[in-house]
Amino acid sequence: MTERGKKIFLAICIITPFLLYCVYYYSIMVKNAPYRFADFESITFKYGLGDSLVNEFNSKTGDYQYINSRDSLIRTKVRMRKDDLLYLHRKAAELGFWNFPEKISGEGNPNHSTNSPQYYIEFKYKGKAKHVLYDAQNTESPKLNDAAKSLITEISNMINDTRDKDLK
Image (tube, rainbow, N blue to C red; front, side, top):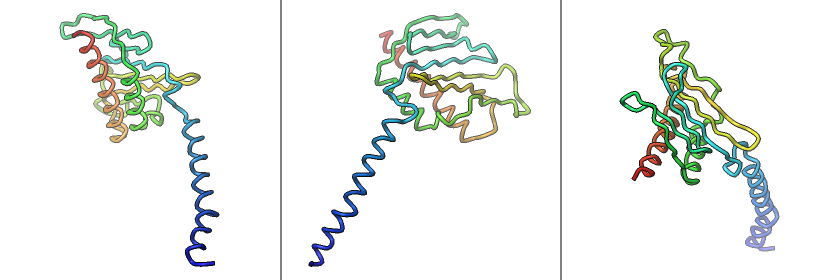
């Protein structure tokens, strides 16, 4: 057998089955991912000062209520497109939302106030849900704080952009 023939035989016998197995294995892993967008149902986002989470958005019903600059409670409908929800799902996955603890509190902070901003984020899927309550005065983990703040900013921006589009 020539040297070229040996290389071709090696590729056929070892490398090709390995590549096929990798494709098979990872396709099953992606298909059975814990939080898939195919199973996505809704996002619930609430925020406010202290325990009063007056400002609220639910993507399933489209209900959005918030307090404006004149302290008036405004109720409106905000319908997000599927692309917007997919973007938020991917952003949550990118920031590691599925690994966040259920409560990120600022109780360890000596300057903690009971009237600090708090945010509640919930992603609902068929058969499971992930929710996090985040206190803005948390100082325990800077990386976790940055990820949570980034996700909150993305969700808020998406809601406001969609609301502004609906008003036009």
